Image (cartoon, rainbow, N blue to C red; front, top):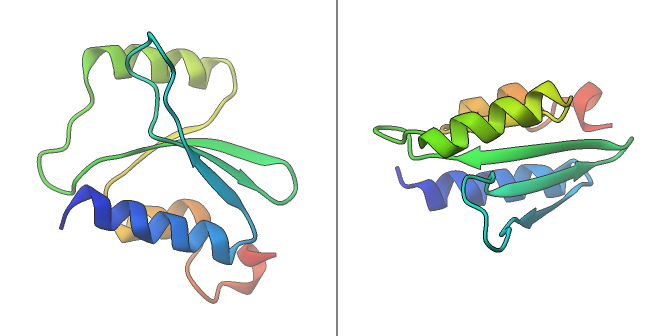
Length: 98
């Protein structure tokens, strides 16, 4: 499975939850997560997507993600459909979808 397939699933799930997501590119800075996710209720997360096998975080990502988490900004590293479901809920999970 490729990272693009994981990303496509994330986009579909966030849309089903009534949220939006945007690709993140911070000019002149390396290591930022791939996606900003905004969900109803003011829930905001950052998501880094990796391919299921062999996808690794760079040293700059490890450092930045640690800083972001210490500031209270959730950063999720997701590399399977199950990871996405664990964080954002499974399709049809009514309690999470609302």
